[in-house]
Image 1: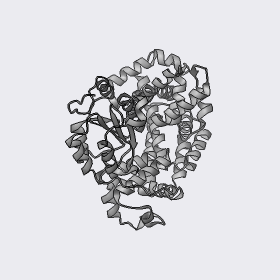
Image 2: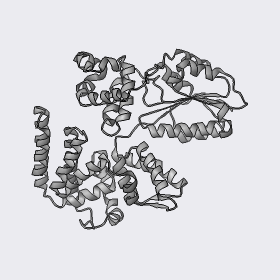
Image 3: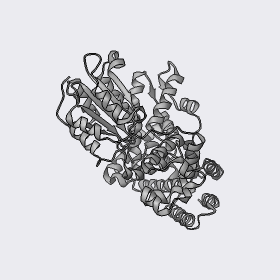
Image 4: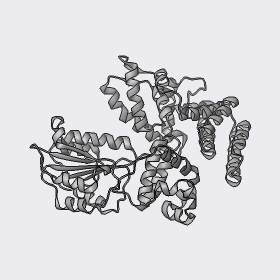
Length: 455
């Protein structure tokens, strides 16, 4: 299997084509916060490198707890037991972290603490490792004894300022679940030197990580000697939905299944369009539906059940539709689940903004044929193409036009209930509550309840 010239970052498809043609790099680095795509790509690269019958003797999968850098180097240098290629896989390594990664780790924790507390706790343990702290040091209110200046120096201004919102909850989870002591991955000099000198012929290193400091020498060596693939989560909601559907359709096709358009909407609502959660839910749906080829919304409801995202949907749907009792119930559910009041206010603000944008779109007169009582399928066929025209004209800043068609459909329907003046007044009310919550810090529930009543 021939070696190839060093390559810069490229696409997964290009990498797989190169491997199929015998152009194999000595090392591959796959990283990014889109964990599902990283793992999927790693599996495809391993499948391309090592034939399945040879994997017991030619594939070695390791992590930071399996002996660290020295064990990886020893395995790479050990002659293969059988003729042919040999692959060493180092999964989910922390070798690329540095103190400059700490603000990114905080962001990852805050993004997942409400939806996936175990994941937030795992990231928190990594943060402790990189920062040089321990659970023992922080328990029993020990974290409050660390000076503010040290917090800011370690986590950055924003991460330190928001620690009261997430740290107690994550710390409590870690202590309750008695996590094992994590092995430190160690220095990287030996691996850097080995890659720079060149691996034995036919030996390949494949590494995955959720984040990297691109200034580290190990990253630069791997980028120079091999291939780097990046899988970063998109911040554009429409793009995230598209990515989820594109990734999962391959699995559906293999199983001879399809999802109805409405089922995609329900699935995304329940998983937040997070790829890993969606993939796990899809596996359950495939099993649940048996020989039936088409998966419907009722199947998704039956299999996945009620989630926090359902509660969010209930609140925003009730708000847009004018159902006060249901909106207040949704607010109570979210507060009970521990969702921060400012997060709930952001949801309400977003819904009011969508209604206002819907009113503006209808006012252009370019959405011919739209009626508030039309069904979703007809809207997609006859009206949504015009909405996509707005998206092309206005770019990423056109918030509503960039959303999923079902979100646009509901915003247009519900905006008919309001005048421009009413929606502007609602935006002013939301702003006033935002100022009140941030300045007083108390009575958040009463402020939100009063806001829903006023809306």
